[in-house]
Length: 322
Image (cartoon, rainbow, N blue to C red; front, side, top):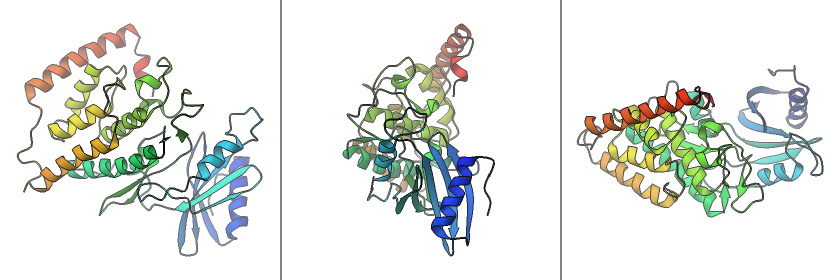
């Protein structure tokens, strides 16, 4: 058994899991954050992922989530193949445990260093995540924390991914929709410290688009205007993706929520159209309409120049926020 016993909280998790499953188990801490820890637990021939969330009572003031918040997360029984399903829940002394199957290849973030994707498989992953997100939005729920580390890879060949970690899940009209949370790099401009807007479905679309772009090896710098974003995306992806795919991603991450592609159903149609075109082409890179050098160069140079000017004015502080 392996676990970091330097933390009393992690030691408690370790002991609680042992008491639940018995002594003949192997426990490994595989992830931790502000909202809990995730353990890989091997029991006989089965392998589980167990998320442990420490909480406080609703009337207490603490950095930890309240009982009501963790129960909301745990009670979500998502019957959808693109969303992580919780198999079992149990509670021990102000810690809630949620049990699900452990994904062999872990997360997009963890495998991103060696997983080289062509355009078709990039679109395949995007389409699968749009399916999961479409279901969430149909239930009037906003994920609020879509990023590579929250996308689990069930299989590489064939490619199958699922959306996970619903710790920040919120109803569309929830009271906390105006509270900033999530990972700053993947948050849209309207949810920034100076944005002051409420979370909407459009915020999830932005985070998903940025997740796919990040997976393809492009890191979008701050500050993010429509011009600087377009320049960086085209410059980074024009050799990897067709114009049609880049346009989809640009529509997903438009800085203005009113101009952003906001509906999963419409995005899925566009993605499927491009995938069908690729399937009907002998060579995936043959006959694709690409961004021409002159168009890409013009946008990139202008965007890069503006980025440099703003960076100088702000002493690059904004660009270093991640």
